[in-house]
Image (cartoon, rainbow, N blue to C red; front, side, top):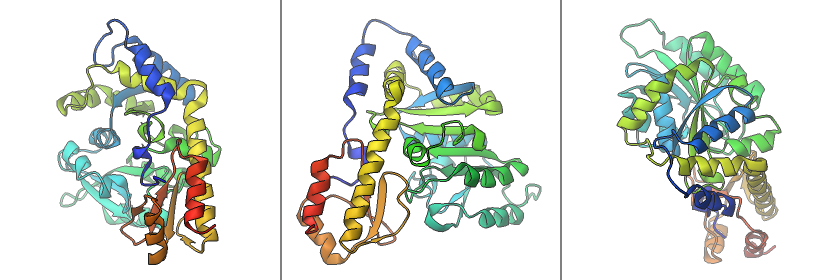
Length: 339
C-alpha cells in the first residue's frame, strides 16, 4: 500500500518499450532528432496550436527554466503560498532567474484567490524603482492540494494578470489528472486559458523521467534564450530522443489520459474508504491526491498494516494514487481500517 507519491510508482511498460524502440542506430543530438520532431507535431495536434518544445527530465528544471525567461532578475513571480515553486524547489526559480522574487498569495484549497491577486497587483506597482515589479504569474493545475482550476477560474486570474502585462506560467506536473477530472481539452486548460508556457509532466503519470516545456503564441520567441539557459544549466539532454520517445508513447492513443483516469478513480475510492472510516477529507478530490485528517491511532494502525502516506505540514495526511495502484491496494486499505 504505497500511497506516498506518484513519483514512487513504476514506469508504464509501453513507455519502457518506447526506449527499446528508440535505441536503434544513430540519431542527432540535443533534440534535433526525428523522434523529437515527431513529438512536437503530436503535441501541436493535442493542444490544437503551433508551439515550441524543450525537453527536461524533472519538473523542477522545467519550472525554473520556464520562469527564468518569463521574469527578469529584478522582477517578481506571483504564486500561491503552497506552490511547488515556492515550497518544494529549494529556491530553483530564484536561482535560475538570477534573483527574481517570489510573492506567495493566499487562497483556499491552494487556489489563488482573485482578490488576493488584485491586492498584490495594486500593492506592487510596476513603475516604482524601489520595489520589484510583478512580471509573471505561476499557477499549478492540479495544484498542491490536489484541486483543479476550471478554465473560467484560470482566465479570471490570467486575464487580470495580463492586463498588467504579466507573463503566465502553468505548472502541469499533474496536468493530465486535471484534464480528465474536468473533462476539458488540453487547449482550453492551457493557452486558451492564458498560459504562455506550460510545463507538462509525464513523470508522475507513467514515465521514467520525461517533462516538456511548451511555449505558446508569442512566448515562442523565448525559445533561443530558453535553450541557452537549458544548456548552461546542464539540463539539455544529449540523447533527447529517449525523453521524446517516452512522451510519444505516453500520448499514443491517449494513454496519458487513461493512466491519469485510473489514478483519479483510485484516489476517489481511497477518499470514500477514509470517509467511511470517519476521517475528514480536507480538500476536494479533483485528481489523484487525497488530503485527510487522521486520528493518531488510526494513522498508527495504517502504518502498522503497511500503508505508506505522507504527513503534510498542516497536520493532514496525503494519500496519492498512481496509474499502478491496484484493487489489492485499495482492498488492503479498507481492511486495515476495519472495513
